Image (cartoon, rainbow, N blue to C red; front, side, top):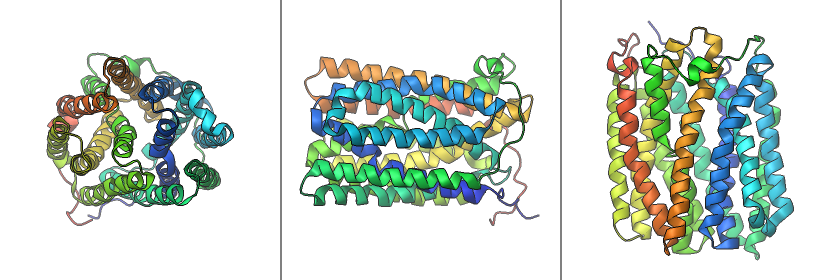
Length: 410
């Protein structure tokens, strides 16, 4: 028996992922560096990301409701349009944006909530059983390839302009073009014609018999920003060491190369019956990578940490996404409830991220060394991955995986 084909809309999802990740990679790290360059104050970044992480789940739930009663594509396009508004605001404010980081964080939180409410639903709908690992592996490889090229382009543009700040403005303008293309490409997606009530109660507060979903929710809480916080602040640490944006872009590209290889290999080899082993070893590897920050901070130590973290995160991401989707499929009383479960999952994740950012705020106020607070939070996030694995390993999806019904060749 041959393995099931990819969903007909999967290729469109790949194109959208490439455009989005290229746009994000052009300036995700560089927005942090831009704020740091204009303020040299870690608190500015802390409040910015605290606002971002606190607002995102609220907007996510609101947009999840709209996706159910109206159309998921409206929400997705709203998210893209708000990205355009956000970067247009940065271009308008320019150097003065450092004085508006709190409202900018709120704006980006609203933007993320809308975008990911639509994107997660679309990705769920275009993954087919038996090909989920392969789909996510290809999706991650495309995303990381975009994140390989884009930071190098940004770093080159910024360092080659006579006025470094003007270089940032060029990058922000390029991002606007990519988001406009993404907005147009979204019209290639099919509309979801089904309209149903939005009932999030059982997903947000699962009963005891929904043991798998309760464990997934606890796992979400322990993630606590491991996918975002280190990425945003590692660029700052590299900039502190080198004072050069091209080195920051090269650092991001270096991480992307590792992630591309690991994502593609895991996309071919991870199967339902091997998810648990991959999740375990990726969790151990990430926890071990935090040891690097117990030693003096150097470019070499940052490179070693990035190598270990990138490999661990890529390996973990495929198994984690697949496990979460399987649990949703098994738990939801109706397949149309997928949006409620995707929205509910964001709430404990946001609580964990907010707690970690509050810890960073406390450390920034208590310590004279700005980099030390960042290092402590990153170490804590690395170790927390073991708790994430523990909760995921309690699910029946990992404890009793289905037998492999497809041939080893894909």
